[in-house]
Length: 43
Length: 538
Image 1: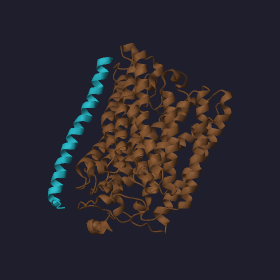
Image 2: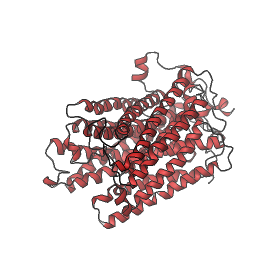
Image 3: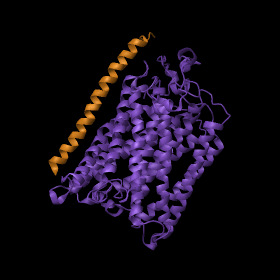
Image 4: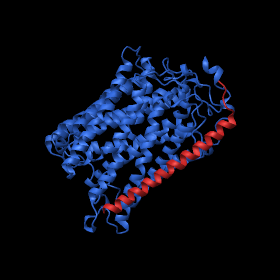
């Protein structure tokens, strides 16, 4: 099996990691804000 | 051997930094950070355990013996917070840090510097939390659930909230790191459905963490503003609702329970096939069962609140939803048993702890089913039956799995074998005394002894004394564990082979023992027969 070069693998990984961190970081912040909003709504 | 041709052996061409401070405080190496997490977790296990000893000493006899009631309440609160956030969760993160990159053929975690930060937040968070015990007004004493208005009565709320925020930030960063690592750093050929069950369990756990830790952060932030900024989120006098806190807290709290047990499922799913010398029975079913449990964990939170006065329809929904969890959990238990069935089993220490896990966790699961019944819960609620239930799940479940995993991978980490004799002595002491400690608590609860009280009716005296004796001896037994680990790390002369256990499969066993400081800098070529789940058809 031909493996892609180390540089290609690293660049692919870097892009993927950046995307994953952005998406899940945004989700975490959104859930925090949503829980505060729920508190405001029901109190 | 396959790995000789495919895995580069130049991994340790640059080793660990010589400077102690640089190596341990500034490390970005997943193995070192994993070790830091595990050592921290062990320290917290003994601190939390010492709080438990105070509790059991006070409850040894009826009447107030040793400590004042407020201090007793501080002990119950801090014992839970330290064990949950300081011992169990960091232990799983430590095991994940050490093993996930090795299991998926990655050189390190995806975000090594964030990994360092995730760990180093924790000692400060716990220093802050534990320092409250020395404040003039005392530490938090309203229970780890922090229900208002009780939890707002002390002066340590700000410390507690800030400590919880720090722990939450650490957990979220750790979870993002694990997801990024698993989704992006796998070696070519390591398909998702070829990953070890432990890696799967951590991936699903990390999703849970990201979904619920911000909710806890939101809940404690509202507590903080209620206490210091005049808001009334949970203050009925100001138009708020204390029960709202319980809903928000348990929306975090119930998935949190699964955060503490799903990685344990993964660990046991690694250990049992190794010592049964058979692939795990129903690999895909195991993965989907973990995912199902994780999903269901979001829709069962109010079973912690049956006695609060929920609408009948709500009680019925949460009762049936909770009972539904028994289905995927049963799939897992039967699959572990089926994996052992007909296997060439041997009973080294990791396997003993794994088998004890299966049996004793199932007892905890069954008592959980009893608690899920809303009408029955009105009897059991806030009694020692609940204490017995969750300790069977968390001690003989989560902690036994962590201990099993430590024995399982210790030779890979250190390059030396631990003492099997002392490992077994540790096991038999643990398994006997943990049952002496927690089993009588079922009877106490059914007889009506409330939890979180420093004094009790003389009718409960005998079982409490038995439970306390079990507690002291279980606590002392864990010193054997420390001795076995220290001996293995510093004194053991018996070298560990690369593939430590005859039946072990997976990439982690293709690297030398001890695992070199850097591994898989070049992605390994994966051969399916090297993997535990390389030829999955079911």
